[in-house]
Length: 455
Image 1 (tube, rainbow, N blue to C red):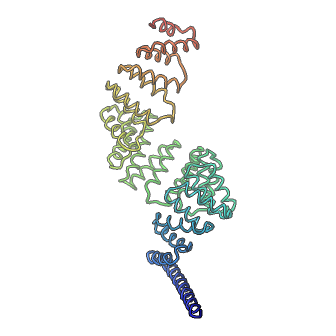
Image 2 (spheres, rainbow, N blue to C red; image 1 turned 180 degrees about the horizontal axis):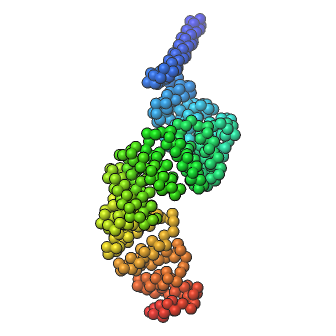
Image 3 (tube, rainbow, N blue to C red; image 1 turned 90 degrees about the vertical axis):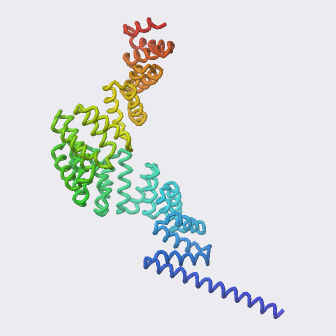
């Protein structure tokens, strides 16, 4: 019995000693990792924390610390695994929950980030920073109303939180609450460092939307003064001046932008846009020639946009050079994002040359790009007319229907629809269209004659 007792005591002592040694080694590894973090030796920190995790796999602290280092090093998938383990081990670990939300946000998993921030707030609703992060994630996920509620709560807890003022301003702008958006963005611009330019850019946009062009220009000029090396800042100022009707000032500003960034296509493109607008408004041939010169410079760059080629094509169209216009417009529709109006202008060029099929194809592509964003009555009517000329009356019927849906019934459109239906062999449809038209205009002679001619 004595031997057994001594043996058990020895084993227990050995186990206790081993556990104590293990605990001491764990503490040493954690301390070593903390020192490496403080010295910004991130690889050594991960090694030390990994040793701690190997010693105690069920340690929330070790997973949290290693996950935080992975996050700092932008190794987000590794950070996600560690922080998820930390939260699983201790669902009340607030810092682990917040960091897990941050990693999901960095991975553009807005819904997952929202879940984590909401879990944090369910445990502690007094943290303004987390309310702000929740609002930002909801905004990125398109939940605008819910984003506003979280951001307002963040500002209730900490009125000095400039980032929350900024994102709330964006939310209010998207809700078309422009006066409130302006106030939030003005507060953000006042509280955030001048190096954070996004609030001022958004504020200039809201001023422009409100018709406060002078204030918008002032903001953009301030941004340009903060970073005199960036030509795009001057481009923004010049375009704002043009929108305000200050064309001479816009030309001067954009000429400076060209001098500052001679290799940047956007400066030439903006200058060409202003000259082209002036040429159209005044019928000024000199302005048109200057527009062509600037737009050709912009289009010669490899990174020229489709919009630049579309405007160059429009300028050639105004100048009467159909071949050059078509070349530019063909270039415009090969570059993403494709400017839809390029297809409209391409249709104008090809129909003048008698290429009816090409013109209709261009209009069909325009209609596909625009979709339901705006009424298409005029374009639909053109497609239907060209389809009739191509001997495709059934397709014409469909597009005349679309034109009537967009603009409402009119005698002219109903006559053309009935004619297309007749040519497609759908006599019943033609009769129905004419009956509807006659109910609205019983004395119309054209409608009565067409109905009498029906088989």
